[in-house]
Image (cartoon, rainbow, N blue to C red; front, side, top):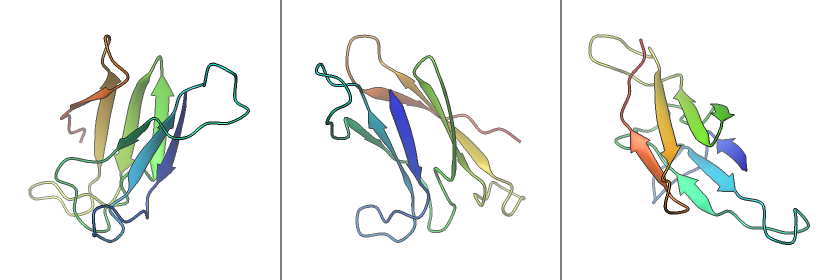
Length: 99
């Protein structure tokens, strides 16, 4: 699995909301392939740089939004956790905020 962060990607008519594109190895190998999942931040706002930084281990994807605001803290940052669902090729978003 490959996860690619696009921190400045416009999503659904918005500007610079960001996205994570997930590619799973095709049956014939990495000769060709298209994205299998597109992950976006729930409740993300303009210019938070969602997906500017990524980490992946055993299928769990952490996507950082370093310019995200949380109550009483401007540009404090947020980490979004996406874990793969066991029975499908989909991800479950786990709303976790790390301070």
